Length: 216
Image (cartoon, rainbow, N blue to C red; front, top):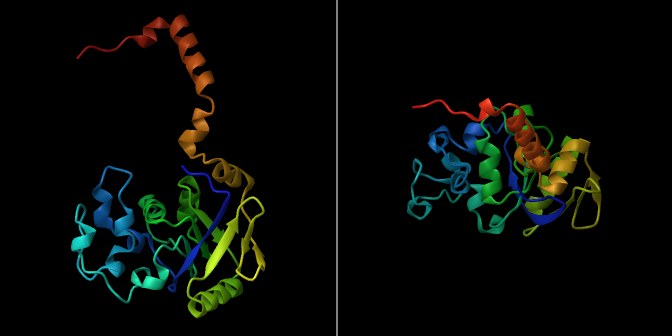
């Protein structure tokens, strides 16, 4: 996955509490066996006026002009601010996939559902928990100032506002290490690829029968 060090991006406001994973990526899109292509269906039931199914051409859909991500001022947003308990509901990993593939690198909210919070780190999305009063102020500023951007500095663990004010946030050291280096679970394992190959070669040399395959 892509490294996350410092990211500056346009902010979009998701002014709803308890946004669940079925709203983030509806259940019909979980049929896909691929791990790509979910971005066009992020918030599908809110984003479009017609019912969506896998494989549809987004250009043929009817967008909801009132939905935040369809408004011109938020096009290209890569930082999402949200209300309490973002990512609640089922544990589908497709939710952070859809957010990341749409273009979001960071999500700021007062609280997150635990499993969604964990899945974000494993998929290159940084969930940032800030006090509710700070998040409310960010909403006010985003609504008031078109083109509002935030800078997220993971190394320093701060969100930097346009006026230079800094909002510190906490992140577990191991999760921070993984994001800074772009390591998902597979990437963490592949750091030891040489040791794994050496172990497999030694095991096969001392126990050659383990290399046999059953016929048929």
